[in-house]
Structure formats: structure tokens, C-alpha cells
Amino acid sequence: MTSPRPRLLLAQRQTPAVMARAQKDFTVFPVPETQMTTARLLDAAARFQPDAIMVSTSLPVRGTDVARLPSSVRVIATVSVGTDHLDIPAIAARGIALSNTPDVLTDCNADLALMLILAASRRAAEYLALMKKGWGRGLAMDEMLGCRVTGKTLGIIGMGRIGRAVAQRARGFDMKVLYSNRRRLPPEQEKDARYFATPEEMLPHCDILSLHMPASAASDGMIDARMLGLLPRGAIFINAARGALVDEDALIAALRDGHLAAAGLDVFRNEPTPDARLLELPNVFATPHIGSATMETRTDMGMLALDNVEAALQGRPLLTPVTG
Image 1 (spheres, rainbow, N blue to C red):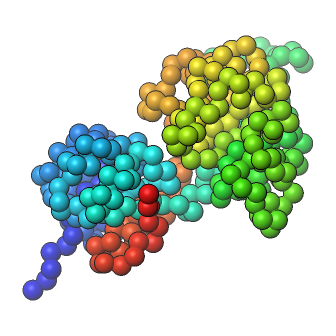
Image 2: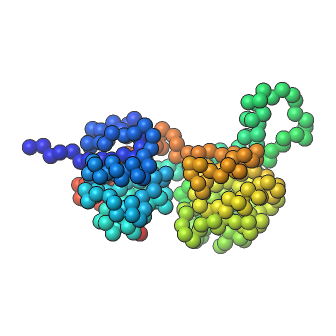
């Protein structure tokens, strides 16, 4: 007699290849057109009694949410690197396996960070707004001038895989790379980058600052008025890491008074409804948390999540486990 297929609850649609595999290998709860809320996920889990759940960074499962998951759930796979949307100790206490999808999105996130650097430095949002109005007149030689990226000094906070990939791309623009990290990298990873033990020591030397570190209770709001004030006037600020790293009131003030020339932001404290004051600023180039949003990378992420689900349900070690 054939064993029933394991039951999989997807909080949102995946790429066609991932959906095809999921529907072939699992009994899949009907996937909604728009991403589930936590409340809808818990309701669906109670009715469907899944063996496995796949979520992403925009769907928190914390505290009492974890307590409400049915006993059928054996694994939660988040289709993301970040796990700050999940209550890891509570999930572990329930005996539920937990996995994420590191490594496979490094290149796309680094590409996106470089796009933010170029777009913020060259005033892409303002130029696009002008063109959408019809252009209409020639610009004077001293009007709407951006900042040249080539040859500038890039400071990176967080020199993990993505930070190093951004540094490698910056070298193609002859940029000098500085970095601050919890520990200094070995020479083969550091290459020609210059290490600073603390961000405070590095910031005064940065034409461009890019964040590539995870969020935690300790790092919440670490980029505040004091830290931004250490950057040279006219610096460019880039965040493709986590919105929680930044005091957005301080960021808005620095952008309004010209201490920062511009910002390129892919992440915000309040997603998916960022602070309207940020989005109204002409010198902010913003994208909706889409660092991994390519067909190739989202497929790789979904496939890795399914690999982890299968491993957990078959009693094998997870490929990319998340532990406390």
C-alpha cells in the first residue's frame, strides 16, 4: 500500500519550477494569490494539519504563534537567509526542525546593493521623475549633478558572503574597500580591503557606506544620528540588509539637511508600509525588499527549502539548519 504524501503548507507562491516539484512530491494546501498573514497561516495549519510549512521574511511566527501550530508540524523552512521573523527558541522547544536558505542568494543581493549604490549616487530616482514629467528643457551644466562612483571609498559593515561579493564588484569600479566586522577576515578573503575593529573608526573615511549584517537585539537602531554624523558630509548611505539596523528618524534628518547626499534602500523598519517621509524624499532610491528577486535565485532558494523539508521528514540531517 502506498504511503500518503506528506502535507506541505506554503505561505506564498513560489517560482514555477518550485511549485511543480512541491505539487509532485507533496500534498499542497491551496496557495493563495497573495501571501498569507500569520493569522491565516495558523488557521490554515489548524485545518490542514501539515507536516511542513514554508514561510519567508515577511511572515512572522513568534511566541504564541508557535504555540498555536498543530502537533503535525515537523519542520519550518524559511525561504530566506534572515530568521529574525521567527522565534527560534520557541520553535526548538516544540521540537520543530528549522532551516533557512543561505549562500544561494549571495550574488543577487550583491548585484542589488551595487544597483543601489549607482542609483543613489547618480540620482536615478530624480532623473526618472523628471523623465516621467516629460523632461521638457535642457539641464544646465551645474544642475542635478550626481556623485561619481568610480574611485570612491566604500565602507562595508558586515563582511560575510554578501559583503565580500559587494566588495568584489566595487573593485570593478576601482573603489577602495574598507570594512568593519566582528572579526578580521583571513588574507585570502580580505584581499586588498582595509579592516577597522569598529564602525566608528571606519565611518569618517567612507564616501559610501553599505550595510550587510544581520539584525539582532544588539544591533537594533545601531545606525543612529551619532553614527551617521561620523560620515563625511555628502556621503551615500546604502541598506540592503535589514531595516531594523537603522534609526529612520535620524536617517531622514541626515537626508533632509544634506549631511547625506542620498540613500539607496531595499529594506525598512516597517515592511511592507515604510515610513512615508522616506519615500517622499527626492534623494532616496527605494526598492521593496527585492534583493533575491530573480527567477534563478528564487528558484534556488525554494529548491533548497524543499530539500530541507524532505530531509527533515525522512529523518536525515537538514542541509542548512538554523539553531539557537
